Image (cartoon, rainbow, N blue to C red):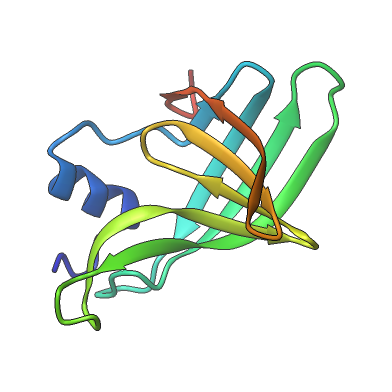
Length: 121
């Protein structure tokens, strides 16, 4: 649909909103995201997650991917949905609206909403 654009840019174009920054800040966490996408590709992005607990100072680094919703043909990536980061029995999801969700066995075990800011803010 938008060849060569990173997933966040696809979200921006498809949602008509503002492009989120690379840092998500929730009540308890600061999460730095970065992604790498092959040129002229949509939906094949890898992503990095560096999360820091604001209370304890503990941090976690994860590698994951962008998740794209498919078009009606069930083959073509249409729009960016979220980032997904597996970590053992847990999976971390980061959504463009600022939601952070952690699941275990398909059940939500933690969820927070935050705000995006640029990496230099």
